[in-house]
Length: 259
Image (cartoon, rainbow, N blue to C red; front, top):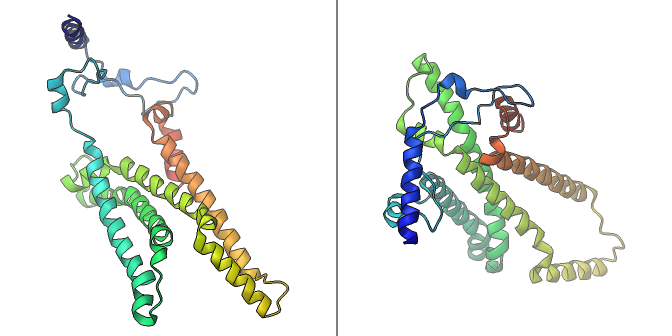
């Protein structure tokens, strides 16, 4: 009985949606109450959009028809390919090459050091893939002489998945920050500290301070923190609930000027 009532409620909701008249595009571009500016991010709910149901109310036949993360497939495939190629190159350079040339075993670097060198390169590459299609689209429009002609299918698909590429870039940046913070926790790093202290004693050095190394690391960490903060701001504004509360001018200012 409960299942029949839930299905009847879903049917009634669909009938009510069908009975609602469509609004004109001029009525959709309403002004926000606070700023009085046109908000491009507040869009009306169209009838052709997929209806979202509760987990207990969604019919089983509708569950099989819904696709599982369709916009994430291309970004995840690209991120997997870039990560695999970068990891292979870093592994050959940091582990295999010293082992072949000088028989030094650095296989302990694979879990942390090698992976941590892969993460920032993948993150910056994915971030470049977010803004590259916009440049290509501008070139295509200039070549066509109009902005009303459709883009090629591959470019249109790329443009629609830019948000997913940006969120994956932020994910890899967060992993890079976590891996970097775990450096002093490694047992190999503690052994290196003991070796450096012993070498300093053997060389009769009271102070091992190197000015340019200190400045380089301080600047490196500072720029990394600032870059992560800017990328976090871009990721937050990509959330639909946040972007819907922004006007076009505010959204464009954050997404363009921060980069």
